[in-house]
Image (tube, rainbow, N blue to C red; front, side, top):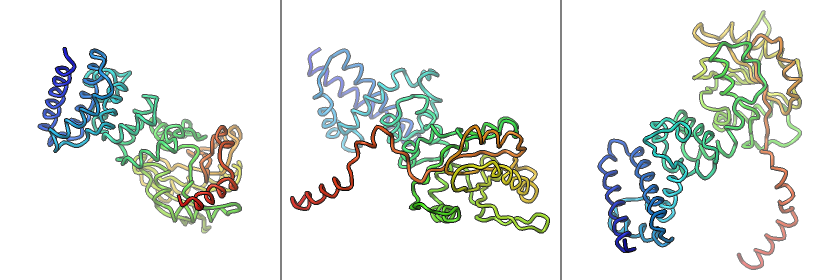
Length: 349
């Protein structure tokens, strides 16, 4: 087959595939687009293996498809390149759904194209990638939120907190609660600087409640700050009280400056008992306690929870995201930054 005939056949096949997708777009726009992109990427991968064509084919395809089908968007050179990469990443047929390669097909086809590109670029491990797909569909994450969750290593932090959930909660609630909480929590949207008090941290988190809720994760509904409860004519105030819509339970958060101390667990146990008695509806699950401190000794924290009867988790929080050690030495100093800025001013850049 001559190069011209090959190219003409390839262009015809792709145009036909595009038109097939158009007829189904009204009923299933995103699903059909994802399948179309995968099919086109697969065509190009297979043709390249057989024909051995060069890099000029993609620019020509992009130009000719846009000229002959001007109403169709998404066929820039860059996006065609993504289609090829998409097909290579998921090499087997999507319709076969092999467990080792793809998640549930319906889930896979619900993920918007921009999300797929982001996941391919940022996440190499297929299983982790599928976890982010599940969370995207379950929580309705737009692309920007998904990018933030990946940047903040949402997957790596899930279920990592010290807890006693297996001993204090029935299954599957114990696992659901563990997966809903994480360690550490990243509060890099705050502008606090040392020294600061616990009440200042609490105030700033409420000021940035939307970002705070995003960091906590899907399902948290804010109930109150310094929530007042009365027990035996004595006043007590819970730092932060939430209700988790999916876990169907109240969640108390206590903010602590410095290192975790054993007495924090006893106090939280008391608070959980109070909320269970005073606020919990008969259909609600047990109240969860979450202690957030700047740092903790894991073994010490496990001992502190050993004989506690209420479900409690202990996590750390960070005000800035830790910088990897191998990058610290490569960052410019303040003097170097100032010198570079002065040089730019002199050259008019």
